[in-house]
Length: 179
Image (cartoon, rainbow, N blue to C red; front, side, top):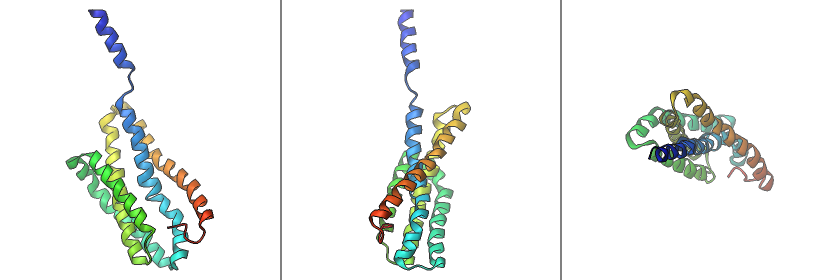
């Protein structure tokens, strides 16, 4: 009987900790929320400026609206994740960011662009802030720094992807690629 318990414990010890699945998913969340929704916007901004005939002041206003939406949401995202659970806030944040990124391609003036980018910032921060708390929940104190570092690396993954994809799209559709 003692050997059976030892074998079962050995099998359990070799299973992959579920925190690693959370970490991989979190990297993708950060890649989408920051790398695509937040930092990827900077790559399309010059084309957007040209396509809509925006001044530098208008372009700066749109970019500031995006960052202000992120700032406002970052203040409350942790509270919302504590109340409703990080999964819900992450899913809603990514969905919201994705929908507003699509809406960005439909704008025709600087004011609607600023509003849509403000809303994108809200979704981006909601997902990003909520996923960061998962490192503390799923990893021991001795591994939290590593887990958080991997999560933050997700933004680099998103930036890498946009750095590759956006020039490809720009070359295929030079006039309206930002849409």
